[in-house]
Length: 134
Image 1: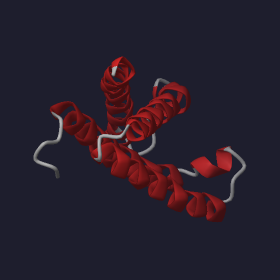
Image 2: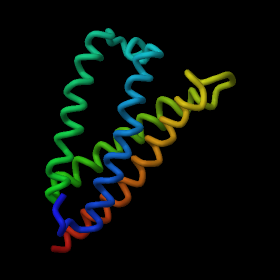
Image 3: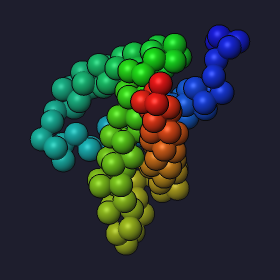
Image 4: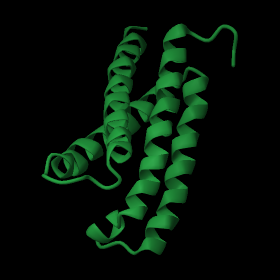
């Protein structure tokens, strides 16, 4: 990492990596509990789509680490996408009576993904406002 890396970017990079810590295991959780079928997608297609998703996710990290505006926009977009997916798809399932998927572990992945995604959006928007002032 660049020794001169802006501390705001360090926070964004850490949040982006923490989001991956929750999102990638959650993706596996989705496969284990037949989430692709709910969207009419075969497991094979979903597995194929997981590859480009991870490549895209990692691809955003490069411009983010180089302190580029596109990296911040990509990270904010990923944070919005994953937080909204957790809120709109999984929270309604979690609040229903009975256990949710594998219990506290699955719930922890969802809540971690939502909270980290929201924090990434907040810090990212603050950084984008700095870009707009320059």
